[in-house]
Structure formats: structure tokens, C-alpha cells
Image (cartoon, rainbow, N blue to C red; front, side):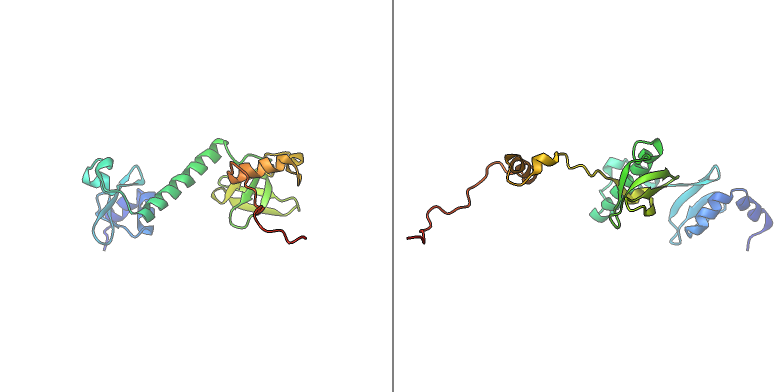
Length: 184
């Protein structure tokens, strides 16, 4: 059971205490936080939790530590990508008003009409409004990069365009000229 002084000391840093208890960490009473197995996880600094990873605890150079499993590397890459998207969004580099975006989850395409702190409000061509988180969107363009007259069926421009899309260097004649003719 806590005495009054312990209660007051924990209440003076409510943010660190709150976050640590939500994570299921146990305090040592001196600002350190441990998980249930007794492993040191974080320290209270300036009213916030400062987390220590395995490399910092052991004092090792990050380049000398063994790489994580492929699944863990994928999670780390996804987190880095998500944080980069967020940083670009806050700076105004991506997802500005009147830009077209596509929601990855269901494919809705809309024009941005309002930017929130970490979400966007968009309207489709059918005047359907939808909100979405920044990390669930991607920039969208409905321009194919080739004018319509260059994509008309039966033209040489369509052949060149199709060859460029399929990375084909040479067109092979698919007619078998050695097949015996059935006409007599």
C-alpha cells in the first residue's frame, strides 16, 4: 500500500504515470519503469516517459546488434513510412486542398476540401463526402500521361504506348507462315 508521500510524488508527474500504468509498467519509486518480468523499459524525465531500447540498455553500437526478424523489419518500415507521411502532411508537402486522393481501404476517389490535424475531408464526383486518416490515403491522378488521340485503336501510337507499358522491345509476328493453306 502506498503512503501519502509516494502518492504525491507520482501525482506530480501525471503524464508519465498515466502512460506507464496504461502500458502495464511497474514503478520502482525512483522514476524507473519495469515490465512484469522485471525488465527495465523506461524512465520518467520531465513529466514524460523516455523509453530505452535494447541497444541503449546494453550500451551497444546499433551497427553491431543483430538485425531484427523480417516480420519485425516490415513493421519498423511501416512505422517509418507512416511517420514520414505525417511529417510531409504537417509541412504541407502532400495532401493540400483541391488535390485528388484515393482511399486505399475502399478505393474512393475524392477532392480534398478540408485538412484536419491528422485527417482529411474529401468529396467525390457524386457529391459523397468522406473523412479519412492521412495514412489511409494516397495521392491520385486521373491523367494517364498520354493524350487520348495517342491511345486510339489501330494506330501506331497505341502500339508504341502498349510496348512501353509492357516493356516490349520488338513485336513478334504471331501468324504461322508455315501452316498449310486450307484454300484450294
